Image 1 (cartoon, helix red, strand yellow):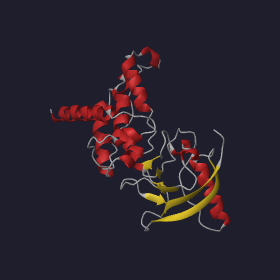
Image 2: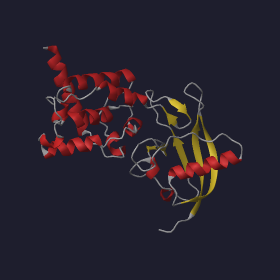
Image 3: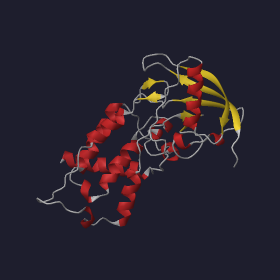
Image 4: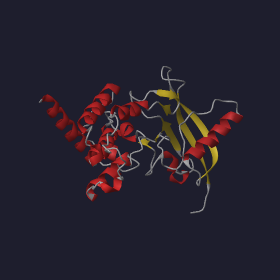
Length: 254
């Protein structure tokens, strides 16, 4: 498809910090190439604002290759916008000339706004840290991981769970701001492997406890998290997390 130039109106959330009152501000942007990515379009907007001696829009990004999940934006009411994948993989060909595009940060009390479209997702880091380490008994020598048999079905499921990039789209999509898809994926990737069995019980208890302490909501099986996840993480992982948590809780009661 040949590239063309479009003119758009942007409604962007501007907020100085988590304590300041934010608001939507309107910007007109002309001659946007449909071949450009959404982030390149925001770069173009910021160039325009800087030339006008105005404050550029703060937004998160890093690899711009759909790997890191930093580019987390709520676009026209959908996490990462109207296409599959992350925001950096969204291209302006998905929009039409004259469109008005609404751009907001993730909305969750557990993801406080740093500035404009940037949110603090360190709650995810603390949940992962609560999971602790994996103990491996090497008996004084290193054992090749390939010598430990893992059923292919389990290996495939663990690999799929490990694909989670922690972008937070699941939280942004959930009406309860639940992080259960993220936590379920992180628990599942170890629960399915023999290497993760030593700390399995404590891992499930600690990660769920930390998730609750961070202020995330509960899952009510709406399924929006799975739909909006750019890596297609299945809600089966939430069920597995619940089973791991229940087993660990019952075991601790004995």
